[in-house]
Image (cartoon, rainbow, N blue to C red; front, side, top):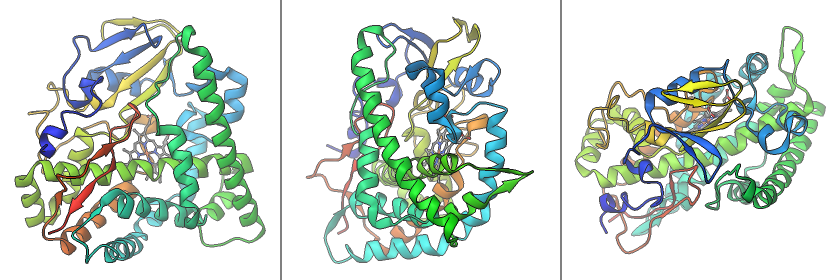
Length: 399
Ligand code: HEM
């Protein structure tokens, strides 16, 4: 199968992830008990409306009190005005300079990882680089041992390693609660792990992000231990698996579009736009969730207060009313106002890091391997969760 036809097989039951727009841009999904939004304008509307939508979706599953305790320090689930206070403190530690300074380290890691495979006829991109590189970068940045990456992988697999969907249908409650319990256990393990490292940094500071977080102070406000551990956990998980998918998807997209690959190889200044285009068409986080806090209209649909809204950013990113030739991979597409990083208040805080990793890694990859193609005899495997759109295994041939 060619890579181009392979791309039409991902997530069979969700054709809009591959470009088929559903009949309605906003619709209620009876089976899952939630609204679904597919149109670009409508997704932008929800992401920009902090008065009528809350990012704290956990409260619908576990109740207000448990969610408040669990979410303390979880920027992604925090609403205004707390979001602004928390983000100011976090940004104090996680600065553009901290990210920019990583460039030489990222290049060194990429070279070391590719050294291991240089003499072979081919290698598996995700196992050899697209997974270990981002996880090593974020672990080193935080100051936790990158040697624990198998444990991090097991936590990510618990969250995204199956094809279960979030459901609010009363008939699914038992199953959903079992999933929640497992995810809570996993999150508790991760938070406990991060707490231990944060406590250690309070005792003996080092040059790392956890130390910056425990020391951060803005207008007399400081982060609690719990907040440091929760935010550290968010960075660790959000900070690698998405980037892994981005690196895999970009290599896959270039393979599916050889003329575009040749264009980018010939003009490396196109690498950043090629990466943006790859995550527009294959958006690693394919969905985002919000809860309506009041009765509110999305497009023509009236959504009652308290209901969940699932936004398919992966579908919105192929909306023909915004993107010319929406299903075409154009490595130089500019402007490219896709929503793969989110939009508005919760816009991805790690985007500069992921972009840097993508630019440096592709540059090194092109330098080292003049010939590169997807191995036609070994399977490309995708992440099973419909909340994600990305490769999990990508065998390449280098000769
Ligand atoms: C290709 C890689 C990545 C993609 C596609 C991605 C995507 C996203 C998206 C869509 C959101 C918004 C979710 C929403 O509105 O509900 C988000 C938020 C976030 N991301 Fe990323 N992300 C990536 C890499 C990273 C990295 C490398 C880090 C950290 C080092 C990171 C940290 C965060 C954080 C902390 C937030 C929460 C921001 C807030 O709520 O204010 N992400 N990301």
